[in-house]
Length: 358
Image (tube, rainbow, N blue to C red; front, top):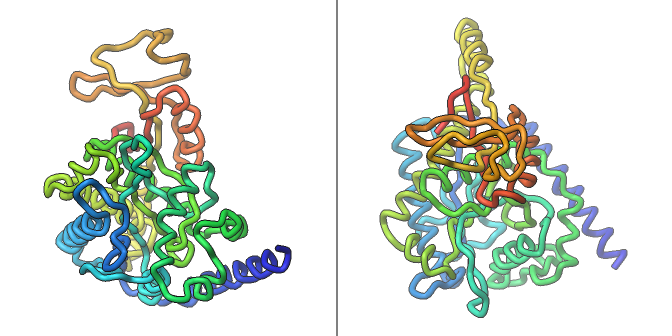
């Protein structure tokens, strides 16, 4: 066990060195996003009553790619697969790393064993320690794709998706892209909840092999539970797939806007000054929205469940209540857990100049 642990640590340090050196010497040429529809070919992914994960995510992925290409001509869109074919996990990462991509979006559908009652809703994952057994179970299910590969034990340095011991590796990984990944994951999750009206199952961290291997901000989106009748019915439809793709696209659009502001995209010094002033004047502020009512509540209303201090904004004839405020997304993510203990469907919203960004 000690020898294996030592090998794991050495391997992790090697990965970190390769990622950091590649990042330092990479010569960027425009913005590249890699869309990764999970599974494919002989690997169907999770199975619903009348659909397969591999088909749903491929359709949503291609719709997402078309939205990006049609609205952002300066962005290079790559797919790990655009047909029904099997692609090994390390090959998916290799596609992204060779392209020196700026963003990696992996699309999946969740599922529970048919003997258990299935929940519904969307989850967006970033690489990290699995904070709960549920997160570990999702990671195990998605990582089990390597069992379809030849000689997977050698290829992935002895990693076995079914052994909790294998996940020790993630305790030694420090993801330099974690902050950007969490930011993008929150944008995606908020859009899927607000625009596509999906049940919110939050932004989470877990040990996904495919995210471990890529050297860029990356997320893995579980678009819904294919084992849930309502979710499966929605994900099978053209309108449902269009909505899911559009929600992820809107999150991408916002992420790209912030990326452009922070990257020196203007060559004229006067333009840079104008852009800097504009960015300063429109700093984002994040809050946690937890309750919607048709009337204004008193400060001690039982509907607030003791949350203090709270704020609200008016949207049409609706009062929308929020808790906390910070320009630091990591800080507001920590507050989110506290609020969700009282309001499980609470989610993060963004404000600019005092107005909600939708």
